[in-house]
Figure 1 (cartoon, rainbow, N blue to C red):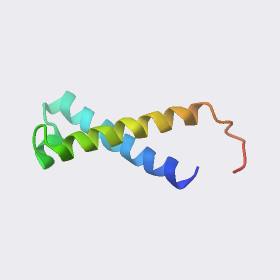
Figure 2: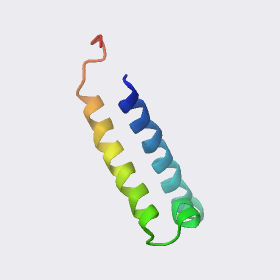
Figure 3: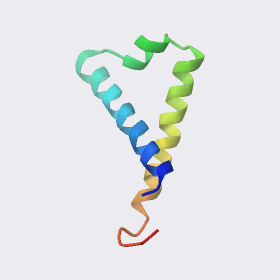
Figure 4: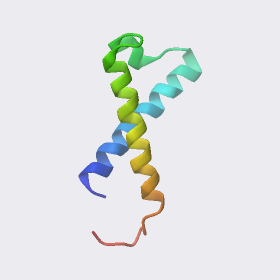
Length: 67
């Protein structure tokens, strides 16, 4: 796993934790930290979405493949 994939995984985990907080407690950590509909909030959501797309590509890589 290269650095881009690891970074994408971190952002995907952050996004998953945020969704967990929304589902359990109706608390959006990203909006709480950066404001509702602010530029930074939208940027975080975009980054998490791109990270998820990168992680989808990991599903199709051979796990035994040497990099």
